Image (cartoon, rainbow, N blue to C red; front, side, top):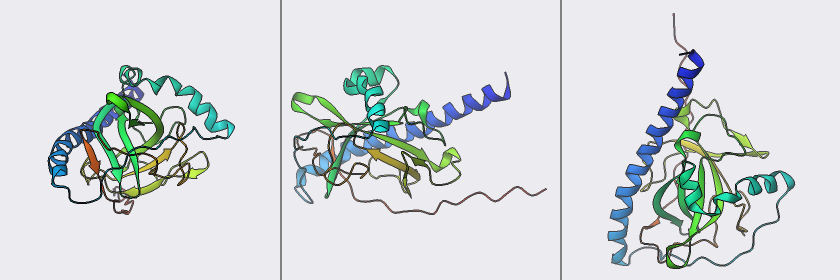
Length: 220
């Protein structure tokens, strides 16, 4: 086996480990949060508001067209995207249900291959594709803040508890390709997205920004 092949397999293995941590934490936290949600404390989940698809520049319109097949979440699953189950919402706006593809996790963003697809819950358990997210953990060895579509990523930040382990420090970039966002095309949350009625709705709080510490060079 060549060194390049070994490196590729190691990258995929690391991606699966990172995504496995996200999924395991997400499943456990979703159940706990659902149980706590019956207490009636804290902000209430909003209902998604109907909004049209945004007008996009040609570069982003091409990305939306390339990812259009994932409007059917079954196609996303077939192509390796795994549901994290919980519907994520913040007091200022929602995100939705994240589907993550661990084989796409790496230090360099590909505009046509987002690591995460974001769906909002619809009637009778349906899901509607609303956004794509490029997600780069620091553990991938990323050298610095990535940029995509002439936009710097948000972060680095802690993992989004309770769905994601706090220790999963990362950069991310949300792009609302299928649903207009009054807060901005690249804003992390959308005030028109809500999780009301979803069985695993999560009301999260903003995460802390962290320092991107680089390992010291090895000494001889």
